[in-house]
Length: 444
Image 1 (cartoon, one colour):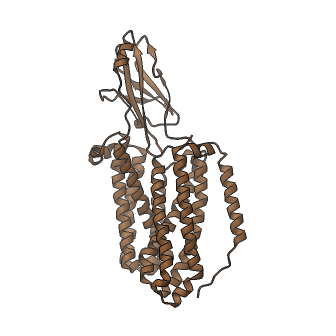
Image 2: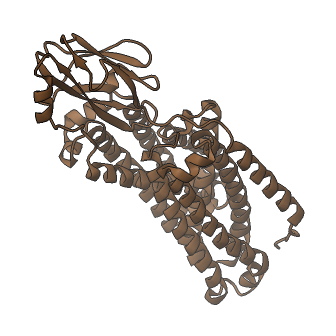
Image 3: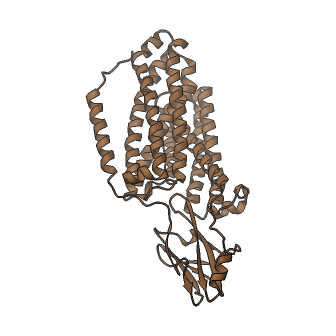
């Protein structure tokens, strides 16, 4: 028997009011830093010098690892870079000679792997003006194809993570029997394969992105070697190893079925792998760029966990549970998932507000930057998802008993299937926008 609870409209209004107040207060906070950029140089760009300097100093707006800074001559020769301070590096110029001397610089953000670049030139001696007129080289920029591939790999990674983590949670908490159902097993195996492949592809794409290479560089061994010396590359490698460990958890479920899903040992292993995958995914975002990076890391972990339990459970419900139309399963699983989804969405919303406060930090950045526009788009699509979720929850409250009495008749379950399918499709759009947010530059 299913027990319905009366709607607590007053509690919901109070909660909504608190969230609105929190959001308004957070938008008055100080804005977070954006990607690493050059603050100044010595000599400065465009300077006219009587004598050639023996080195160039680059000062950035946040701490950098000198190994992530590249300085190149127009002919492609790479200049030696040494550490000069937390935010500065020293570049040995050799013998620039007379005329125009130009270099291009690039730096990789330590937190999210975003690549920034620019060009510095200065005149030396009496021939500087003539040389400058003939030098029109531009600063390098990441390939659009590589950037799009990186976004696609991240989208695939987010979807795979949500399906795998949410699917495991769904089976462990609500539907242990699903461990031996073919559709549920196929969904989990596909999510695992997608997660591992997207991580391996992401390594090559990240390496080509930060070196301003093309798609051919994605398959070069040297690209992987170079990117594994950077912090984003190390995070990706750790995530790949965790996906390998996740194969052990998946194999245990596939072999043991419902018995494994109920086993405390298997649940501890699944929880450990889940937290590792979630943490290494959040380390590639902007959550640590605010004034309180520790809170940003916790909020991002909660955000990803809530989204995974919601989205993965939703897809498991659509793909594996509803097509069976077994009355006992519908009566036991659907109300349980409804409560889990409600808690997950609440955690996701609160954590999302904290992240918005951390990364955006002002109304101006929200309304006048590409990052803010993407965040508003994500919020708008998420609102549409909430509408679809509301219809699903109303069906559970008012029609589930009838569907159970009719023994899962297709006509009685169909409206719920439509609303859940719409909810799932819109969630995939939200994940696509999230992939774009990771590569976008937060507003200052």
